Image 1 (cartoon, helix red, strand yellow):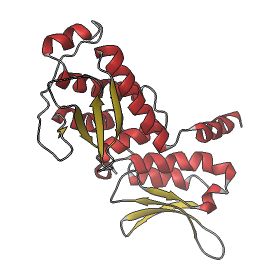
Image 2 (cartoon, rainbow, N blue to C red; image 1 turned 180 degrees about the vertical axis):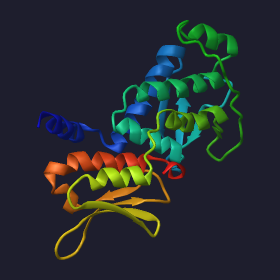
Image 3 (cartoon, helix red, strand yellow; image 1 turned 90 degrees about the horizontal axis):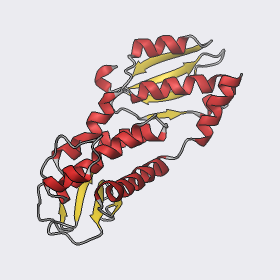
Length: 236
């Protein structure tokens, strides 16, 4: 009983996606200032909501802003931060901050500004390009940091493993059809759909009201659905 109550409390206190994303932005701002004396502001590009802008708040001979695309890998990492995955916020923000510093600081400054316990072993030049908003295109390493972080601790769950775990609950089953997996509860009149998980896009699923009402099992079933939905399509 205590375990279920703890799981329920964690669910209630889990931050929203927007809050988790803002936590990441705040961490980047704090770390660029603390580690490299680079005061920054981090925000969504108002002209392109699929782009993150990191703006330096002091003079620089380079572009004042750099841009990071908010691709699917980036969004997956934010969702994992939202789920309070241990240490992920620090690891991911550290990776981004080091790459940001690699653009604005000379190489010798980066080495001296970084603590000896966490040296920057690799830097990549950020390529500049002329755009209407005068932003700099991010380094490929920055673009890939979300992807590499997302792959580091993925816990793949195949459909057969997921279906087996779901079947452990009385009258529950999982079936695949038309590009999606559905979780079903058998009933005398007709089967009831409890959840739908996309088989074409990871981290896309819907929890139906019928499952939300099942307080005794939803705290065990919903984490299974989330784990399966989080699994890359190619690993299912």
